[in-house]
Length: 175
Image 1 (cartoon, rainbow, N blue to C red):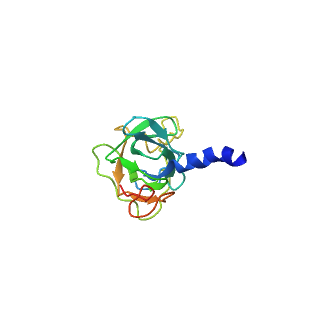
Image 2 (image 1 turned 60 degrees about the horizontal axis):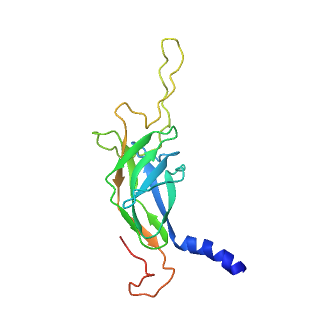
């Protein structure tokens, strides 16, 4: 009886995969505190990632057998930033799939190269006429807005869970 109760959770794990990606601010530094939205290209169902960490990395668990694409990012204050230029990723077998890095840019501007050395996260703000400092604007709050663009290529790390070799049903597949 116990083996029967444990079977559904093991089966569910075999039917999912992990999408892993990195978000970068316009200056090339990691974008922390952002969630990513991926979409099943057939059903249009959207999936929300974990919050990006100090390295800008996030994860999303999705069902195997579908194709997914990154469509947006959600900022800490709820703003939805579109992400462009990323082709759908086929998720064929359980495992981890590396998504292309996403660099946020101001539309119409050329992306900057990452800085050679670490820079402070906030610049001093000039005092207002009343003598109080103005709160710094978050990097994603630009007058012209933001958009994310895909960088790099996709690497798939998948593990066969059943089946034989020679491209059989359980063999890892590359997109």
